[in-house]
Image (cartoon, rainbow, N blue to C red; front, side):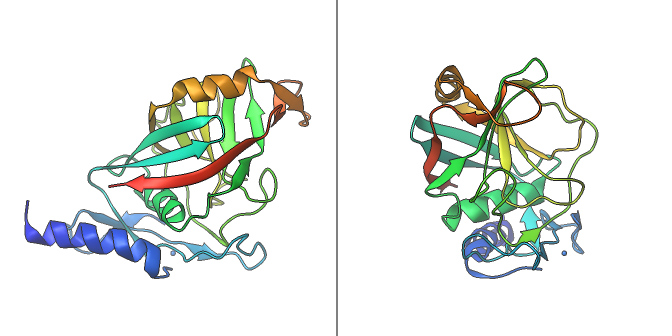
Length: 225
C-alpha cells in the first residue's frame, strides 16, 4: 500500500467531519488518485435541521465502510461500497453519521406492499422534512437493483439527495432513480421485527404505507473504518 493512498484515506475521513465542502460526481483531475469530485449544494430554502458541515467535495472510490445504526429494536450494520456507482452518497452518509446527525432521530415511514417494502429514515422532523441543509446529484448507472438488504438514498426528485435513506426489508419494484450505497451485513432480523410490529397507514398509497406502529428510532449511528 503506497503512502500516498494511506494519507489520502486518512485526510478524506477526517476532513469529512471537520471541513465544509462545496458542487455532480465527476472524475478527479488526477487519475492516479482513487477519488471523484462531489458537489454538495446549499439549500437555504431548506436549512439544516441540525448543525452539520458539508462533506469535502471529493469521495474515495476504493474499499468499503461500515455504518451501524443502533435502533431501539436492535443494531443494523450496513456495508457501504465506495467503489460502486454512488461514492458521493457513501461519503455523505458516513460524514453525517460521524457528525451524529442521525443520533436520536426517528424513521418516519415503513412500507410493506407488493410493490415496496422499505424502512425510510434520515429526516429529522417527519418524512421528507428535516435534511442537512444541502443537496447533491443522483449517482445511478442503470444497473441498480433494490433487493432485500439494500440501502439506498431517498429523494424528492432528481438531484435532491440529502440525509434521507431507505433500507429494503423485502424488495422494491421501483425505477432505477435511487443511488445504491451498499447492503446490510448484520441485523436483518431487526428489520423483520420492525415490520412485524405493523404500520399505521398515513400515506395515500394504501394501508401498507405509513408510520411504523411502534416508533422506530435511531439511538446512535457509528462508523467503522
